[in-house]
Image (tube, rainbow, N blue to C red; front, side):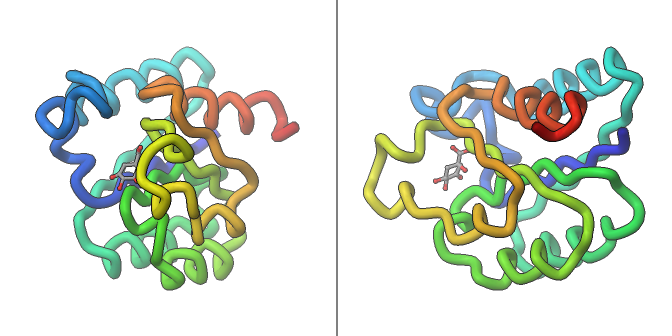
Length: 143
Ligand code: DQA
């Protein structure tokens, strides 16, 4: 499968950003882990990270017809970006939402995802492994 992995704001600072919540591994380490998992499953993964809402929307639009699946961590946009929700709804490529932290056990605003309704599934609270779990959902046929 061809995966596009989209990460939103501040995830470029993984490793240095609130390590007690997000761990001490870097964004590059996350990408390497995902690439290894893709390769082990005869798949490919491309990566897109941006701190800008419009750039993320453009990447979602550009993915249509190019990728089999999007794995997206919209980061803080999860909680209020109706524009990203609409972009995910506008394309036919299915998306799975991932959060590194347990968003249900933090500030109450984090428990709400406005983007998840446009996704085929959501995983949170499993650290970096959540990205692989989302990939596996597609690799196992989306059940
Ligand atoms: C996050 C959770 C969000 O609430 C937060 O704004 C992030 C990261 C996560 O992966 O746990 O930036 O999406």
